[in-house]
Image: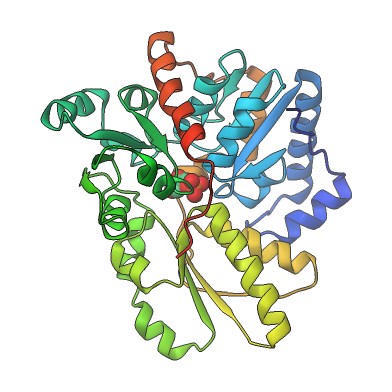
Length: 347
Ligand code: 13P
């Protein structure tokens, strides 16, 4: 599938940069960098796949923005020659596993993930020996080597659907302990064994006192990412993956417009998502109220316009996956697409 390159005009760029939450002290230089990226995209038949957690300015050069599931679908189908992943390393590796003929570039190798760092292929092999009857269900936020040792991969958007469809009762869910605990509560018919990984960003929301915030704010709607602590999920109005949260806000905002209710949203997830949603509404002339801490993923924020331009110009760092690992990881990802058809895990 051909993703249309998004090549917005310098005038539109200036407007959008001014709307963003990023501090842009050098507006004209930033516009020049974006124009250089756009020229390189055209010249090299490249697409930029961007995650919602990217900096506002980086999102302006993304030809497609999405959650990790959507981005992996796009990576699998793109006809471009080069994929630049404006995201973190496990996402770029997933793109390479799914579409190995393409050159996959990650703007910086600093763009890691605490969940992906928490478990190795050797750990999974050891766990399999300890739980021979369990299905090994692996969160997509893992290395290619870990995916290769798995029966099926999942993202926050399809995890519940996929585990429910598996014939095994015993599930070894790796590596996110919070998502694992949330699934235990939601899928009582399954025996879910968890691991000890955590997302360092979503873990910080554990301290939020949602019941008391609610008392102070009528019309509050709390949305939480599946990677949050179960206490936050239990207190939230909605939980799921990133795209599901966007859809929830669109639905609730439209309903509130009709009923006249005033809503305030608290998003227990990366601030890049809430700032994008706020900007999108602002550009339509609508105000959407968001409260809560602006927590940032330190890994996602290592991607900048400048290192993205340089990486596309130099075509490095290139993400490569050894073929014997790739073919095994591919099977676990394809099983995810096969089983994960129904989307959305709304509460
Ligand atoms: P999504 O699957 O919702 O995009 O989440 C990706 C991620 O890395 C969350 O920390």
